[in-house]
Image 1 (cartoon, rainbow, N blue to C red):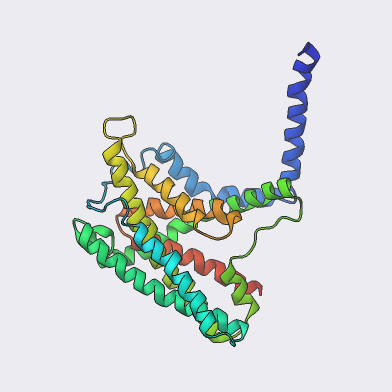
Image 2: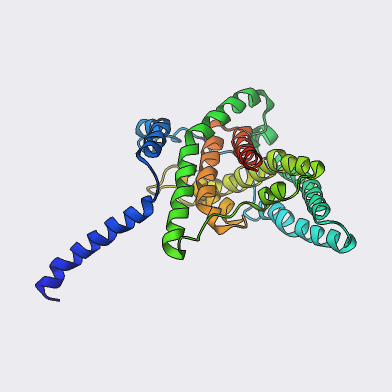
Length: 307
């Protein structure tokens, strides 16, 4: 490699980076950036106060339990395996339904199956957590505080979620071309495609009530607790003294990848980390449930309003 190549290499790299950033910025205006930065102020203040999150969960105590490693996978298998099989069987038994009726039956089976799985999770939590359901995070005395705190948590993390969505779409356009756009969630497609009231009511119920409850019980309540307990046992005496953040990040990754649309995974990871943090910080499972509920409700409201 000669001197000219050594000098020219960084120069062309800088030019490429600048051009990429210009393309990446697209039609984002200075006003958009200013609003985003102002909205990010509470999050930036939290980062500064907690030394970039390192001190945020130092007093968070692991939930005592005797769950074996395989236990959370039982309701996960039922949720994503057996219920999907039941939906396929229902379609075979009722082949002559209209498209919106098929969507209604799919969501009805999904809701019924989710209630059964939630009952199983509650039973398992009752059997394996030291303080039973209260130790699991289902103490009802804090619901009113969790409602308000969940709303505040979502407001604080919302600009970060939106920024993640923007970055995902921009990077997707750089890689796959300007035609790349994030696809709507399947349920949001259904709610805009079919105006029938019974279907819309059922989808709203499934997205705003059923999904937040079962997914937070499963991922935050069971998987995050199991992973943190396992890490606490394995890393004792090593540099990592608190396994809360590793458990949150691992669970958030699992939470993201079980969803169907890969382009949604970055944003789902961010909102999952927010819900995982809220669970560890409060000890209440209702707080991430409310964050999840408000997040889904906001997306449905925006979709219906836009439709």
